[in-house]
Image 1 (spheres, rainbow, N blue to C red):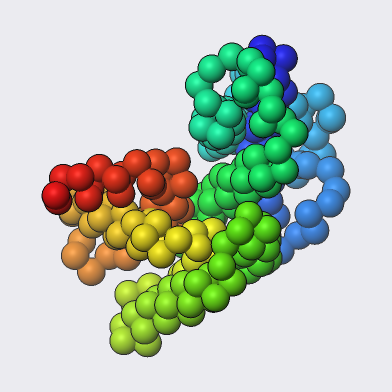
Image 2: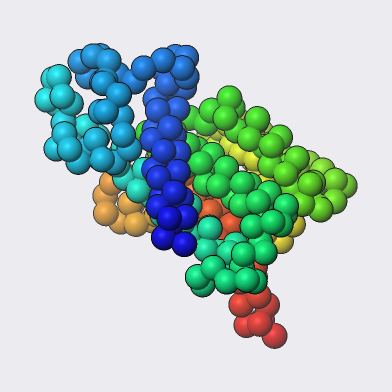
Length: 267
């Protein structure tokens, strides 16, 4: 299990590093391929300066060439993605060491499909979070293909195509109506496509609604805190994609448990 855990952490750090790279290159409209470079001095990095987390620590958080600070975003995203990869591994496998029962999951096709879906969701939602937080933009180059992949994976896992289609239509209509009513001031066009992404990720309508409500609740709380602290005004905009990404991750991790707790409380 220790070896598996090391592999998962390394995989998570690598995906976190790629998420950072993808956000920057999409924003700069650059090719995804090609060697990484320092965004300050533009010098191409050596291969051993690209090892996730390790290189940041070894270089003391500074570029080898211009010695300017490397943004804390890079190691933070890498560590968070790695932590989420570990969490979802244990969520699917169970918080126990490998025994005969858990070992049988390694030969279960649905186990790997669900794990791949959740790992891909962590990666995509991280890209959405960072991209919208930094640039107040949503990249359709990531969101739309990811939505198609999530829909395909959920269909393979047994989701009803009819229910999935209705969920997608409802989510797109929900965000699209807000866009039309507010004339783009309440949310952006990219948020409509995030509705497509969430509906494709959560074919269960109750989980889809939970993800959206969680996002709006978090956005309201953060907005009020920022207004009280004097950091924002009532007319200020907040990046909705950030909260939709967090709401989706919360739902992916604890959605069924939260719904069960809610209905138990109501009864």
